[in-house]
Image 1 (cartoon, helix red, strand yellow):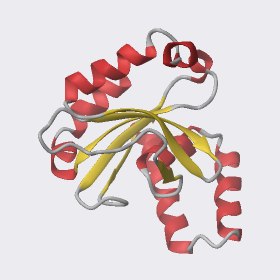
Image 2 (cartoon, helix red, strand yellow; image 1 turned 120 degrees about the horizontal axis):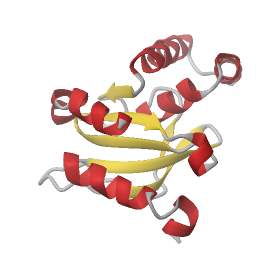
Image 3 (tube, rainbow, N blue to C red; image 1 turned 90 degrees about the horizontal axis):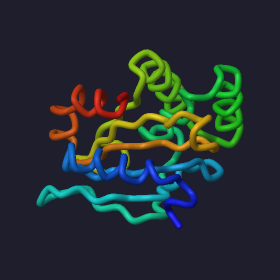
Image 4 (cartoon, rainbow, N blue to C red; image 1 turned 60 degrees about the vertical axis):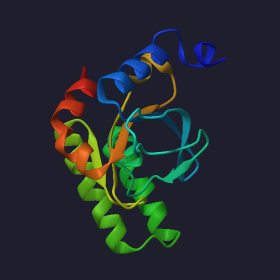
Length: 160
């Protein structure tokens, strides 16, 4: 089923990313106001980020959500954040989300640390739309210290 949904080359690419980083690698897609992990390849470190397929993260404030927002046209992103404001998202969280999106657009990837899981960080970017259809986000996640130290290397791998 995964190869039928994601194509024959996507799963090996995710496995290669996990093997190259030894960190947990996820493939996520938007699901309402959340990003849902469709595939999770657990890291091989003795202490690795443990996630299950189906785990969801808020779009606002997460690395995968930031990559998703940054991939939107500016007006669509602004409209999404305006809807979030109307639904009660605090102004400080929205301002931070705007800053993260701006940074992601500049760097080409999103990085967020210690947000939803203490001592965990993630680096994320979207996959090309034309190739896989819907917006899919790949993330490499693990202990904040390891991810932060390897951020440049992980980002280069993702961008390749």
